[in-house]
Length: 148
Ligand code: HEC
Image (cartoon, rainbow, N blue to C red):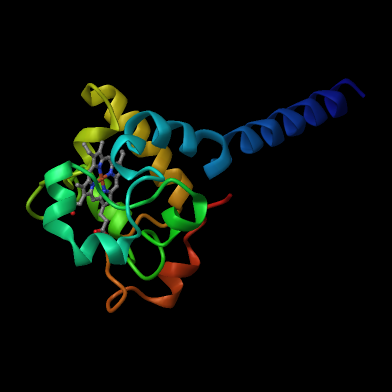
């Protein structure tokens, strides 16, 4: 009986851990975004197409494109800007040239915070894939999680 109880406790503990590890936009990711990204990617920033149309003017203001809602954000993960979030946030450690994406610097004030937040984004995305639409496979897209 004791053993059965011990086993059940272990299973319950494991289940709690798995649940605790589920990363969602509405939970942890949005918080990181609001701390580190929203200043340039908030609701007063333009839609992506509008940004591209007037890129120089927006860059002069130091403003990026809107990304502060779940719907906006996932368009930089899956489609149409497939892999954009991953290319920009990656630390470059797994790439040939070793260069981080140009938004990696915004992930935190020091390397430790940047790595912690990168890990969070990686878990949220699931299949951390830097490929563009033309190169990404259906299987790779199937591995994308981005839970709300
Ligand atoms: C100081 C302003 C600023 C901050 C802070 C900032 N960004 Fe950006 N971001 C920009 C600008 C400006 C661009 C457009 C220029 C470029 O492509 O580099 C951009 C481009 C991007 C793109 C590329 C979109 C595309 O497909 O062209 C992504 C993805 C992105 N940012 C994500 C983020 C994330 C996530 C954060 C927070 C960790 C962040 N940015 C923080 C200013 C910022």
